[in-house]
Amino acid sequence: MFTGIIEQLGAVTNIRREGENVHFTVKAEMTSELKIDQSVAHNGCCLTVVEIDKDEYVVTAILETLKKTNLGSWGVGTKVNLERCMKMNGRLDGHIVQGHVDATGECIGIENQDGSWKYTFRYDSDQVTVEKGSITVNGTSLTVVDSKDYEFSVCIIPYTQEFTNFHTLEIGSTINLEFDIIGKYVAKLFNK
Image 1 (cartoon, rainbow, N blue to C red):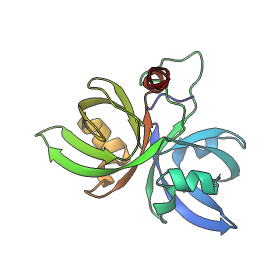
Image 2: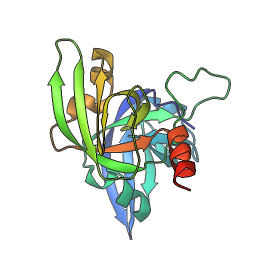
Image 3: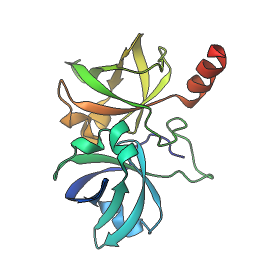
C-alpha cells in the first residue's frame, strides 16, 4: 500500500530486456535504505527490488505491466516518481493507493496559473472520476478539479511541480492512472 506522496525522483540508468521482461536500473538517493524484495512504486506502479548496487537498484517489469503502464516508453534518463510502501504506524498524507495502475492517460492540457499549474488528462477506461475526489497520476496523489467522461483536470502547487516528474510532462505525454479504490468498488457494486 502507498499514499501517493512522492518521496523523490529517480532516474533510469539502464534498460535490459530478457525475453518479454524488462529490467530497469534506477539511480536514487533512497537506494541505501532499500532491500531486496521490497516494493517501490515507480510512477505509481508497484515493482519489486531484485538487485542493489551502491546508489542503483533493479526492478523487473513483466509483459502485463508493460502493456498497462507507461513503463514501456521509458528510456535511459527518464525521471521516475518514487515512493516506498507506507508504514502502518505512519500518517496517510495522500490517499489509499495500491500501486496497481488501472489505465494510462494522455496529457491534453497544461495551463500555468501564475503560481500553480492545471493539467488536463484524457483516458480510455470505464473508470470514473468525481470533482474533489482522489486520483493518482504517475503515483502522485491528487484531487480532481474538473471531471468529465474520459477526461479530468488537476491543479498542482509549485512543490509538486518541482519535486515530481510533472515538470517533464508535455502535451501528448502518457501517464499512469490509478483511480480511487473506494470509487472502483462503488462503481462495480452499482453496475451489478
